[in-house]
Length: 164
Image 1 (cartoon, rainbow, N blue to C red):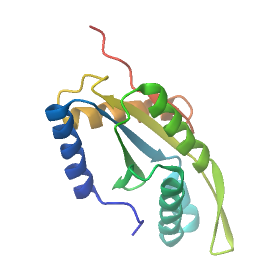
Image 2 (image 1 turned 30 degrees about the vertical axis):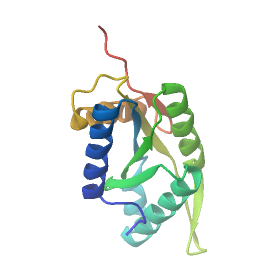
Image 3 (image 1 turned 90 degrees about the horizontal axis):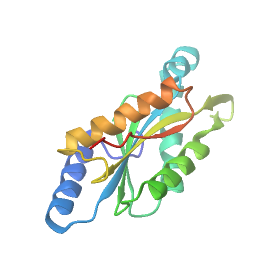
C-alpha cells in the first residue's frame, strides 16, 4: 500500500542486522516513527485520504534517507527505519530530526485536500542501549516514541541510556 517494506520484512531485517552485529561487531540504529493525530485524519477526511497520506509519508521518508537505510510500515501509522552501520547517537538523532522536519508539513492530496502532518520519533542504538535481543531494541525505540508523544508530539526522543 505505502511503498514501505512490510512488518514481516522488518522482522527479518532486524534479525539479520542483529545477527551481523553479534557475529562481526559494529552496530545499527532503529527509529520508530508514529504519525501524530492520524486517527483524526482518517475521521475527518476518510480512509482513502488516510491511505494516500501514508503513501506520501513513505515517499518523503525515502527521499530523506540514505540509500542503505530501510523503511518498514510496522502497523497503522507506525513506521520503523533501520539505519545500517549508524552506531552513534548524534548521527542517529540527526537523521531522525531530518525525518521529523521533512514530515512537519501540510500535504496536498488529490490537488484538493490539505492535510497537516507531523510525527513523533523514538531512537534506539544497538549496542549502545544494551538491548538483550531484537524485540527488546524495538521496545526501547517504542518507549522513546511514546515519550515524544507525551512531551508534546512532533519531536525526536533518544531512548534513555541504561544505568549501570
